[in-house]
Length: 174
Image 1: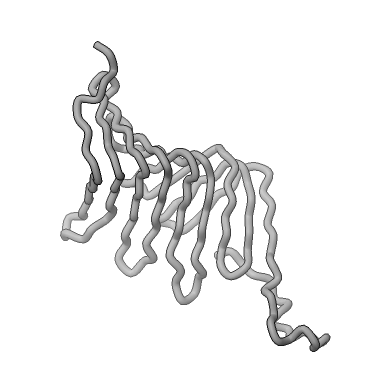
Image 2: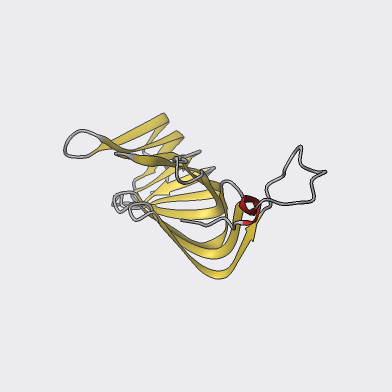
């Protein structure tokens, strides 16, 4: 048999809850196609949202995606974006790449592709290859890592040559 989808769903939404009924994550897509030969599921415009109690939520978007046969991995492709919501102590983080493999139950995402990470207020990191551990709130970067701190623009202070010490403290990625 040809590998034709045996079913398709539009505006697909799948929700996973923990033992006490809290939503752990939601996986949604504008279109979902299941292929019986490989038991894989292809997604158009997948959107993944990870919730944690008393933790910022994390969202992952892509143009295309794929769910593995056992459902343990979700792959995002083309214009992949990860957004971790900001908290009072940590600014919003945005990560862009073109391929990302997510293990939703482990809360781990990884890629061997180039990534750009923007951590508010003013940190930009580029690297090739990354593992993002949402539970531990850590990011491991593997190759060609470059960190750039953007100087915050200071409107209204252009005429003052003296800089305050606050302007000189480097940003830190926590």
